[in-house]
Amino acid sequence: MRLLLTSDTHLPARAKHLPDALLREIARADVVVHAGDWTDEATLDVFADRAAVLLAVHGNNDPPGLRSRLPETALAEVSGLRLGVVHETGAARGREERCAQRFPELDVLVFGHSHIPWDTTAPGGLRLLNPGSPTDRRKQPFCTYMTADAADGALRAVTLHRLPPRS
Image (cartoon, rainbow, N blue to C red; front, side, top):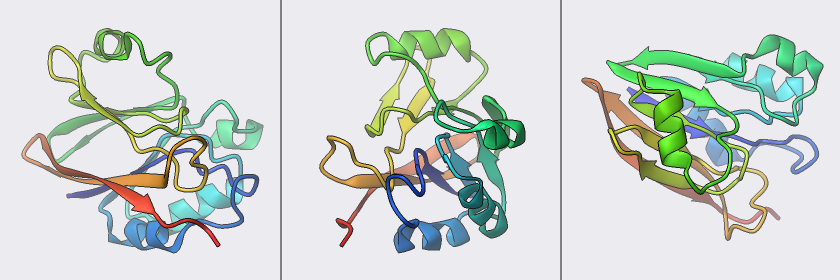
């Protein structure tokens, strides 16, 4: 199964629209994961209309309408892979240990908030992934998102995609 991982779209404040490359990936993915901070219900509707399966949470910048439509934590099994999604995981220091204690049943945890791409494995094997942001790079050199493949309870071919600068 092909996964698309994204977060922190922040429309329309940080960008006027979603990048074309991201929209193409939504259509290609078997499962789309969004780790919160949409800030706009219309963006959620775009994802929901285009995604075969959408696994998503709300973030700290999301208004009440989005919070009523999305959970704080989402869990799913995808091709035998136990996957979780949250927006915030706290400070980078100690993240692996904290998340491994909070989510001992998971294989992979996707998170957002920092806009900083992250790919580490906690003691015990929990894989932590932050796809960055496709619309707001903050201090990062590029806006980003991730793709991956899930099969037989394993995550394979995790790729960080860099988006070209907006014109």
